[in-house]
Length: 181
Length: 122
Image (cartoon, rainbow over all chains, first blue to last red):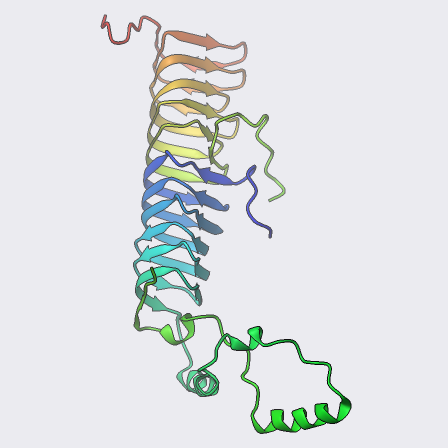
C-alpha cells in the first residue's frame, strides 16, 4: 500500500470538527479535529494539523499531529518526529522516533519474558554506540593481507547487531516518557 | 482500494471527504466544503458547501450555505444560500433556503420555505 491518495479515502479537513463516534473500513486522514470515539479497520493518519481527542481503535496508526486518548491498534502505532501523544498505547508494534513526544503507557501484549531477556542481553552489550555503525566510512579497499587481519579482529570483537527500532523495545508495560524539545 | 468510484469532479476547496465506508454518529462542524460518500447521523453545520454524493446517507439536521444532494437525506435542511436536489436523490424533511432547485427525477417529501430574509427577520 502506498501513501493514502487524495481520492477514494477519507479526509477530515483542517477546519472541520467531528464530535461523536466515527466508524469505518477505510483509511482516514485527519487534518482537523475529531472528538469522541474513532474505530477503523484500516489506517488512521493524523497529520501535523490534526488533533484527535478520542478513544482510538484501528489497525495502524501514524501520528504526526496530536492524540489525546488511548490508542488500541491491532498492528502498529507510529509516532513520527512531529507527533505528540498523551494516553496509553496497546499494540504489538510501537514505533516512537526521535523528536516525538509521548506520555503514557505502552502495552505490546504478551511478551515472552525469557526471550526478551535474551534479546536484551544481546542488545545491551553493543548498546553504547547504537547508531554509529551507519556513520562509519564504507569498508576501505584494502590489500588482501590487511583484510584477513581485519577479519580476525572482527571475530574477536563482534560487530553489534543492527539496533532494534528506537526506544520502544524496552518500554513494554512500563511508564515511558519521551520528550524532546 | 479498487471498488471505490472516484468523486465525479474534484471540487475546488473541498478538503474534507467522508468516504463510503465511514459512519459518523455525532456532530460535524467546520468552515470548509464537505463531501459525504458515507453515512452521517446527528448534525452537520458548515459555513460552506455540503455535497452528498450518490452513496451518501444522512440522517441529520443540516445547516450550511449550500447543499447539493445526490444521495439520501433524512432531516431538515437550512441553507443560507442554495439547496439543490439532483436527479436520483431522496430527501425527506423540510428545506429552508432562499434558492431551492429540484431536478427532474429527484424524490422529495417535506416542506419548502424560500421566504428567508436572513438578518432582517420575517
